[in-house]
Structures are given as structure tokens and as C-alpha cells.
Length: 360
Image (cartoon, one colour):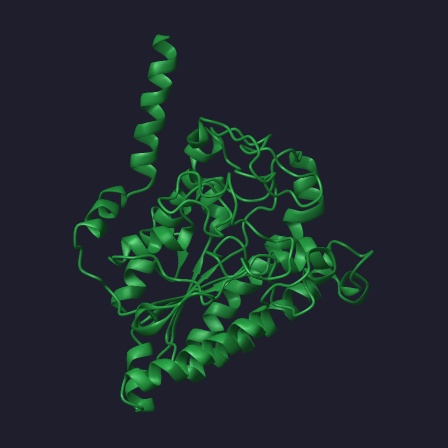
């Protein structure tokens, strides 16, 4: 019994130490000053907060036991509680989480919109065969254009004023993992692996992503936080399988993405791009290494890896790495978000972290 109590105390201390902004989460709820005017979000299921709810798709999470630890219950977040961008919004002093494009209305869009979509990729075909509809990065950019038209009207129909407003906002982008897991690594459905070597594919993906980011720059965006791809080892996988089949090709993408960050900072005047080293953060966190990772917290479907609707879930969720077979628990993303916002190591973020990006 004494050892169990000591282990519990150790876990609490590790969470507090490894998420350096734990205190700031409290300040956000008590009127901490908002550091930027708005936060825009682009990406996949790791950032989605409800955009897939009304799509004809298997990539949905708007049902129990998802959201079991979120105040509003199941919302379309693919985890038990908050997402990385929910934490980042808190760290940046926002009073509310960024609404999904699917439901964002009125003046709330002036504080930002979340366009992320479960199963989305940089490439338009990614995820289509297995899961159905999803909002690819190109479609997310089109949705952003709709938002900008509305914002322009609210700000007095002066494009210069809108562009100046947007230049102070942060654009969080986390996309690319599905271009591997439900595209390149499934040759029975997609031809990409027969067309490109892993190195070529990393270059092709990053070139396309850079074009998409340049479009956002042309719309007025200036501050970008780009999340590298995290280790794709879900619950129940072995380390050898992960390293040999997935993680090596994912690392090629991350190296290329960091290189593109440097290039975009050089060629796009006034822009500030940063790279968040999610793989590095995951490998250097002793707390994350202590979590249960061989099984998912919720009872998961063998077909999609998502939670069984209204299925069983573990009670000790802060001790599990994965909520379903694919997506991390809230406790895991809190560590990633904390170190993305305030780097603990020089390798966490390049050339600096999100807290500095907000002031840049």
C-alpha cells in the first residue's frame, strides 16, 4: 500500500514538473491576459474538435466514452479530455477553446477557428478509401477563406486591417501522419509507395505542405507553429514493428519539415515559422515512458482502432498512454503541449517555442 501511495505521489510530481505551465492553466480560467488576438488550427484527428461530427465518415468521436474527462462530454475530440490545442489556448490566455469551423458563428471567429479533421492529410486522397469523408488540408484552406470573408466584414471591409489583425495571430498546423498510415503504408489501396521512395515522399509531402502554408501567408498569416509527426506506435504494437515499418519513414518527414521551416523563414518576409519536435519530446520524457502503452484505455474496435461506442474504459486514465488504439490520452498531450509552449530542452522547438512565437 505504501509503495502504491508513493508511486501516485511521484506521478503527480512528474506531471507538475514536466508540464511547466500547469499553474498557467489555472490563470487562463481566472482572467489571464490573452497573448494573441486569435488562434487558427489546421490538421488531423489529433487537433480535431468536432469538424467530422456531421460527415459521412468512420472517423468520428462524438460519442461516449470519448470526452469522459471533458466538461462538455463527447464533442468530436479523439481523446478522453482536452487536445494539444486546447492546452495551448489555455496557455495563451484564451477564455474559451477554439470552436470548430462546423459550428463557429458570429464574432467568436475573431478569436480563431479550428479546421482540423480526423483522417485528413496533406494529400487530397489520404484516408478516402478506408474511412470516407474527411476535410483535407486543401479543403481546410478553402474553409479558412470563408472565415476570412466574414472577418473582413466584421473588421470594416478593409483588407489591410484584416491582414494586420491576422499577422498577430498564431496558426497551429499538425498534419502528415495520415499520409503515411492511411496512404503510403497501404500499397493495396494507394500507389504512392510504388511511385516514391520514402525520401522522395517526404520531400513531396513537405513541398505540398509548404505551398499550402504559403497560401495562408498570402492571406495574411505570419506566425506558424508546425508540429512534427509523432511516433506512430499505437497500443499493442511492438517496438521492432514501429521502428522497422513506420518510424524510420516518419523521421524522414520530420527532418524535411524542419528544413522547410528554415527555408520559409528565409524566403517569406516577416514570417515566423517554428518546428515542434514531438518525437524528441516523446523520447525524452520519463513520465511518458512510465505509462501503460501496450493496451488502449478504452475498448477499441479492431477495424478502425477507435473506441467502441458506449464501450468500456479504464478508470485510471492518467496512467495510460493511449485512449483508443491510435490517439493519446489527455495526460500525454498535456506534456507535449507544455513543452511546445515552453521548451524544456533546446531540441523541443526550433528556432524557439510557442511562448516566444506569441511575442515575436
